[in-house]
Structures are given as C-alpha cells and as structure tokens.
Image (cartoon, rainbow, N blue to C red):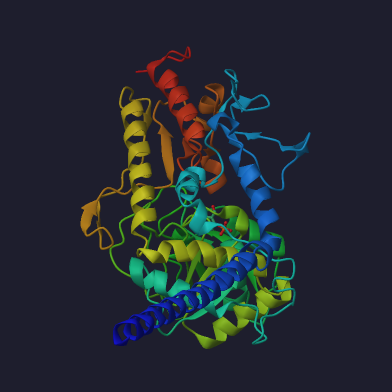
Length: 468
Ligand SMILES: Cc1ncc(COP(=O)(O)O)c(C=O)c1O
C-alpha cells in the first residue's frame, strides 16, 4: 500500500513539473514570437513602407550598367518604363556601348568624376532617403539656415585631415564655393563707394574671380587684374582684396599671398587643398579660407561650399550676403553633404584620400610617360611636398595639367590641341599666354583614356603634325 501511494505521488510530481515546463516555455516563446512578428511587421509594413518604393526606384536606375560607359539617373529620361542611359563623351547608343571614333577627347571643365567609382563602392553608406516632408521650412528650428550637425562634422574633418584650423573660426555655408567667393569680396569691400577696393589675383588665375566681380558690378569694388602689378605700387591708398588660390587652378602651385599691408585683405581659395591633389604641409590658419565639396568628395552638382572666417564682422557680412542672395543653402543639399562627410569621417578620410591620391598618381604617371616622347610640349613642375596626412614627402598630383607648347611657331596652343581632337582650356582664359593650355585630369576614366590616346597620337606625330 505504502509502495503504490508513493508511486502515485511520484507520477503526480512528474506530471506537474512537465506541465509547468510546457506552459512556462510556451508562454515565453509565444511572447517572443509575438514581439518578433510585430517588429517584422513594423519593418516591412510600418516605418519602412514609404521608403521601400523609393529605394526600389533608386536601385533600378543604379542597376542600369550602360556598358560601363555611362549611367542612368533617377531624374533622367524614362523610355518604356526603363531609365535611359546618359553616355560618357565619346560613347553612344542605347546602352553606351558604341565608341564614337571621330569624337574629341574632353579635358575641359573641372567635373570631378574621378571619384565616382569610390562612391559606387560605398553605395550603401552614402545613399540618402529623403521623406516628402523633410525640412520644408525656410529655416532650421534654431532659426538659422545652417545644420549644426554638418558644421560640427566639417570641423571634425578638418582636424582629422590636418588641413585647416577651425578653432576660433565662424563658418558660413554657400551654394558651392562660387557663391562664397563673391560673398567674401562683398564682405571685405568698403561701404563707402567713393573708395572702391581693387580685387586682384596672380596670373594664371581662375576666371570666376574676374567674371563675378565684373558681373555683379558692385560700387564697392572693381577687378584690377594681376596682383604682381600692385606689389611695387607706391601711392596705393585704397583697399586691395587679393585672391590666393592654393593649390592654384590651373597650374597646381601652392600659391602664397603677393601683397601685404594694412590695406590688403586676402581671400584664400582652398578648393584643392586636400590630399588627393597636394601634400598638406600644415593646417592653414587664415582670416578667410574657402572650401568646397566639389573637389573633396566630387559632388560638384550638389553645390555646397563653406568658409572659415576669423573676424566677427566679416562673418556677419558674408552671412548676410548668403541670406539675401539665396536664404542659405538647400536643406536637401545639406543633408546630402552630411551623409557624404559621415562616410569620410568614419575612418578619418583614409580610404577616400588613398583612393584619390592613387588615382591621380596613376593618371599623372600615364600623362608624363605619354609626353616624354616629345619636346614639343612641357608640363608644369611642382616640387615634392611634405604631407602630414600621409606622413611622407610626396609628389603633388594636381587636378589639372598646365601644358606649354614649346615650339616657336605653336603660339596658340589650344588651336594645336583642338586640331588634334583634344578639348582643353586655353591660357588666355586664365589671363596667361596662349602658349598654355589647361587639361583636366579629374574627369571620368573614359575621358582620361580618350585624352591619353589622343595625346599619344599627337606626341608621336601620328596625327600628321611633325614632332621634334
Ligand atoms: C579654384 C576654384 N575655386 C572655386 C571653384 C568653384 O567650386 P564650386 O563648385 O564649389 O562652386 C572652382 C571650381 O572649379 C575652382 O577651381
């Protein structure tokens, strides 16, 4: 009897433990499964629902390969429901596979497509999804036109790269650095128009300085050409505004100010002061320096630049110019710039600058080799520079080749190159001798390959022209 009682008791205990275990586990797993289900639903039908379609559209345009000689864009033409390929200069046909043999190589303009492959490799981290209601207001919630987050990323980037001191500097954003160049001229010009400031630059200089100053035709300033002419001027009483471009466009030299004195104000254009193009000997600490993402990340089309300004009054005047002119920079552009800079900052800029420097080094090596077979043309010479970013002395790899036609009779160099089916920019555009031509080395791979093959023919005399 005692034995059967004990076995009934044991059976009850086992049953009770098993039941508890079953219901307990079920309760826990069931809850987890329900939570998982609801979070999946949020993922697919909740917070990601409106971006899914946009992402699919973006990927569909990006998936068009265009034979590697073009690209399709989300805002490009669509035919039969498919985004249409936009082909590189010497390519055509619906999928850009057709090479156009009689076409001229394009080495004109400063389109920085050499960085496009970098962004294709970083498609995921650099993509931006913009909601239909993203920042519709004229201003940010602190009543400014400038994203504080973007401002602090810019400061961080300069400190990582070591190319500019931002402590004690105000920042103004511009619609490209182009807008800031004239904002700076305005800010440094006197209010009193009876003594207009003279705006000058060293030859060869970037033509926009003159074009803008003359086009906007302000009573406070006028363009007066070559800075060197003012160096020994004895009776200069009015203000002088000198543009210093370092590295310089077109010749890549790390220019320094020519003029000094209490009546001289300097605008440093630092568009190319990044390790793709030049050694970074030290961080610049100037009263007014202007930068742009156009030549940093290659996003010229986004139109975003910034100025580092020491003086409070100059800052206020530049800020006012940008407000009156465009009410700041598009919030969509600021969002894009923020996303791109985050990619750079993630590894202190190492990957993009190594990519850019390697690409530019390869292009310069090919160009030098091509030109080495003839004395008819020469290239600019720039001494090696110490680069604190790469921690070595390195050859400069400027964005442009500044080519000189050396033959006595080749007085108009751009005509010689145009005849050989090469498009570039003649020296006179930079107020220099017509013996010079600027060739862009920062365009797409196709443009660069076309340029090299046209130059090879010209240098070897295959195009019919006699070479030395
Ligand atoms: C020296 C220099 N400064 C400024 C600019 C204008 O750049 P952004 O695209 O920022 O207006 C350029 C463009 O080529 C340039 O070469």
